[in-house]
Image 1 (cartoon, rainbow, N blue to C red):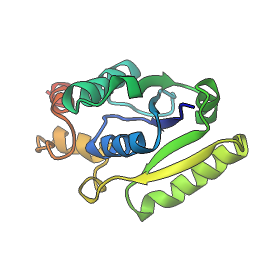
Image 2: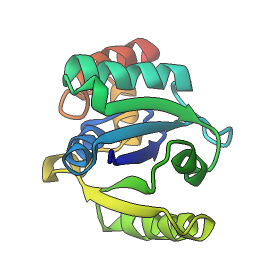
Image 3: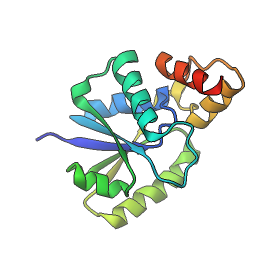
Length: 164
């Protein structure tokens, strides 16, 4: 039986922290579905189509992960609905620091109330990637800082183009 996990997020943009969680998830699950949120209540730097392409470039061209084991989609529904649609009972979430835990704990609880057949699995990225956030990456590149320790080459190029 193939076991897929749904990894939801905004990925605006994808970082080495996200990639770390995906790599670790691939050790536990047969497939990771990277679900790119496209809800209207967020102010995205990149639209969902751009974010999907950025993720694919980062994962498949820069990092060279297996395309057969990762699917990248966008969604505007509840994460639990994406799980049902893709026949997955696992939501994969990354934790960076203790400050993430409270929010993630509440989110996991709400998802569990929405569908008690779905479990949330938390993975931590490696120590060197735990401080990285998309928000900080955007801020650093906007101020002309060096972000090569935080995200992939193709992502850096697109970020720089966005701010020039």
